[in-house]
Image (cartoon, rainbow, N blue to C red; front, side, top):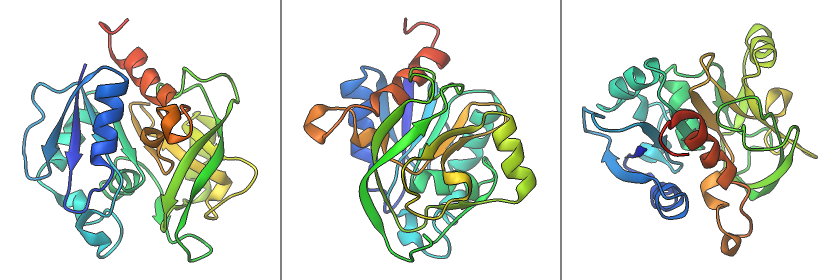
Length: 224
């Protein structure tokens, strides 16, 4: 399975994400610059965290108009996997690939720490976890408060699109403790926590590996 790791000006988790999927998980992967207009030959798209375009306007808003985004939208419409982490989550929302919005943390402060999460293992990005498993992943964001209208929130809940929720405490005020959601088709995931920063014991934990293992299992026919 061949992954494209999208790079924008200001991306700062791109090398972490490439290392996680290629060196730790053993999949093929390469960087794709935001000005490219083709994803030919790729089977999955990974959008890293960081501060694309310096987070001017709203986080992810300028990146959502990049040349590569129409290709990513077409990629998603074909049912291929797209994962956006932190700023990548913000980009997916700004591009209309995921519902709702991400706004300033309710504390108005940047938060950076390891955060307990509860997993809904009924998504294609979380199936390798146990039911209601509690995991720990790093978070690092200033605009991670997820909001949406009640109808959207109810639909997300009823359709099992809420993949991860904050456990013990809510670090940013997200409605229904939402930390990560999928689209209605289940092939696009946006999440604020960083699984790529938790794939080796040297980094402090390996809970993030199961996110990537779930992608490989559910979207790659030749991986197992």
